[in-house]
Image 1: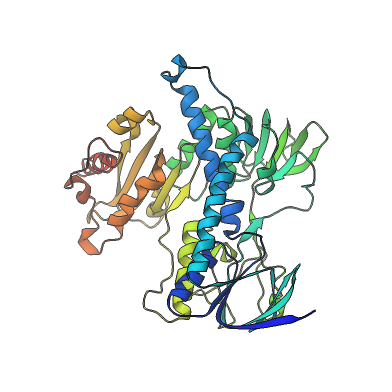
Image 2: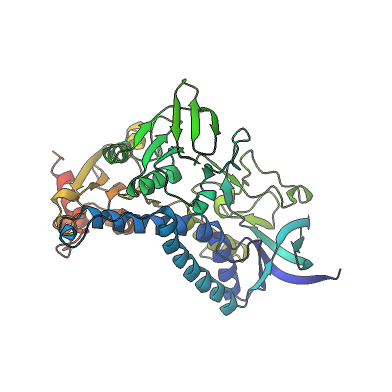
Length: 465
């Protein structure tokens, strides 16, 4: 079999957000770039398994909830319930559009796309294995952006037809009457919201003491209350002993002795970097126990000309951050001035309602002995929220009592992932321009959700004596 050999300035492994950001940035600055992707279509897990499918599912479910709970619509029809396979069709429509757009990006920027599995022969030669043959890509610099996959404990049979993980759940062909979701992180909470919206009974099992423990405590508690208010049974500090099932049901046995029976079981607890089949031992790289690669502030691994970005390096494991990390890594490779380390990342959690935050939490500020004050605006008091009916939630501003510098922004409610960016822009201003009084001295359109910043700022400033 003939083996073709190609030379490039930069080879990127993985066509997800990090790989795309790096490849396009390098190509636009005149570099010869190739990207290796082992899936049939570009976009990575973000497009096909994670961000896009789950958020499209969420949006469809949210529309169903709005129709079924709005008294105006009751005059034109009865409540409608849709199956999980039906709402998956909507997410597939979005995926197809995303793939088409991203394929054009590579073509427009003259980036060579090699389909197949990448394997390091040595530090500068990467073999690409595909059903159609083999090729060798020689590169001066390499970026690993292979993403991650669900961590699957070996004592759970994920081949069982009623046991799923966050990837395989997209193949669910029915709507469970009751589902057990194991994991109180982002993915577990998002799918809990989705299945609650579809009318399923949900048992959310969290091995930790708090849902989304990295969030501000008040926001985390608000989510837990809202999930329970919508019928979820949330169990904290519970670990699984075993998971077993038959043709009709699945049983989760907890270490505490409890047994829970349901129609389906969804594992959402941890992810592993996709590094185990890259041949990293041939270049002297050793991933950690979670399959992740260690990088420095330039996204350089322990091998100077090999970089890594995205989920494969761990925190924060967000598509938004991965894209910026990829762009920054390629900027470091090209030694450009706009290179930076991405550490100012807002969280976006697409539960129903959604959550977003940036900056410090109350617990972090308290531990650091920083004198801060809190400003709150509850959505039930905001005119725009009253008009749309999205009155659940709040905007919370944390600011320094003396300098009035904004230290943290935390939002729970509809459009939270959009609302947070207004505050993010002010937080990023230098010196005295980062000041909570900006929101008091600025005129906002009325009625808007942005007005919540003025309400929260006034609430906080009124607390200062």
